[in-house]
Length: 142
Image: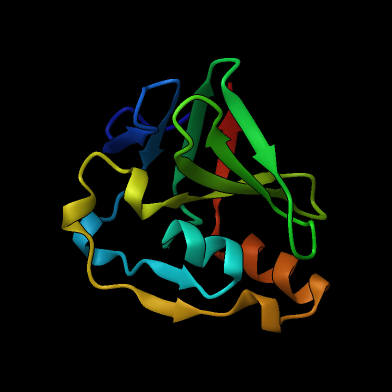
C-alpha cells in the first residue's frame, strides 16, 4: 500500500470495530481540519483530514455502516455498534476510491491545528467530485 518508511497514524471508532491507518509524510500539526457546514457534519462535529499524496486503509468488521445524504456523492462511514463517524469516501470519475478522515476519530486528535470552515454544499456536484479528487486521500476498504 505505502512505502514502509511513510509514517502511519491510526484511529477508529470508540469500540474498535472500525479502524484506519493514514499514511502521510506530513506531520499531524501541519493539517488544518476542514469543518463542513452541512447539517450532518455539524451534528457530528466532524472536521475532515486528507492528503492526496497519502494513503488511507480502513479496516472494518460487519459493524461498518454507510450513509449517504445531501448530493449522495459521498458515503459517510461509521460504526454501527458505537456510532462514531470515522470517514467519508467517494469514488471519482477515474474510478479511484478516496476518503477523508474525521479528525475526531484519530488517536492523536489533540495534535491538529484549529479547524477552518468548509462549505462543499455550495459546490455543484461535478465541482465537489473534482475538489475531492484533488484533496482526498486514495483509500482502501478492507
